[in-house]
Structures are given as structure tokens and as C-alpha cells.
Length: 165
Image (tube, rainbow, N blue to C red; front, side, top):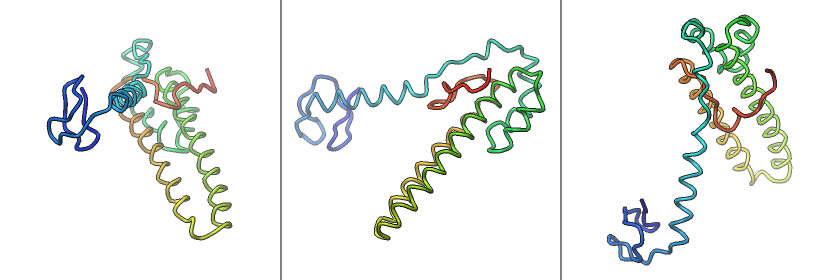
């Protein structure tokens, strides 16, 4: 599926001119769009290991497992439910997410202090860096959805990082 970069109209593959706006369509631009779309789709395609856990583990772990993606509250399921492998899976993933988030915010504060000491006119830089932090909110929501649906699915970006086994 191709889209015109000028007007956004849907086009058939191999067309040289957009049927909607009539502008020329470069195949390089179309291929880049397809590659970017494929990369985004592959980002969300993470391994699902739900079948490794018993239905009893999944059902009993949903309640406390949701704390795994609520910031520092990750410590509760991490230490309280040592016997439930489903909860441990999400607690490990939530702990990695929390640690990466803390490291990110420390880096943002350092960069913000440096940038603002250079010039107040660069105040937009810390704002943009703070908005990028919404990625952590999205990952937390995705983790919560996985817990509530009873799935053991890796989070994009941080799911591959393992600190405890």
C-alpha cells in the first residue's frame, strides 16, 4: 500500500503520478515509507511466552502483577510474589522499565541544566526531551494491558534487557 507524500492519498504500487493531486511520486520515497512502516510494525512484534506459564499462575498473578508497571511499586510484586513465575516475569520487566526511566530523567535533568546555562532561548530543548518521556507512559500502559490480558509478552525497546533471571 502506497500513499502520496504530497496529499496523503492512497495509491496503487508502481504508479508514477498521484491520481488525486497529479504530482510525481518518487519510488525511493515510497520505499522509505514502506521501510519505516515495517520497522514500526516490527517494533511491536515482540516474543510472547505466555504458554510457559500455567493458567493458575496467570490468574493468581494478575492482581499483584499490575503493580509491576507503576513506578517504584514494582518492588512489591518483585519481593512479595517469589513463587509465581508470571508475576516475576512482569516484575523483572517493570523493574528494567523503571530503571531505564530513572536513568533517562537524570540524563534529561543534566542536559536541561547545561542547555539552560548556555541560553534561556534554548528552553524548548528540555520541553522536547520531556515529551519524549511519554514513551515510558506508553510502555507502562502496554505492560498493564499485557498483565490484565494474562499475556507474558516482551515490551518493545526494553523487553530484551535482562537483569535478573
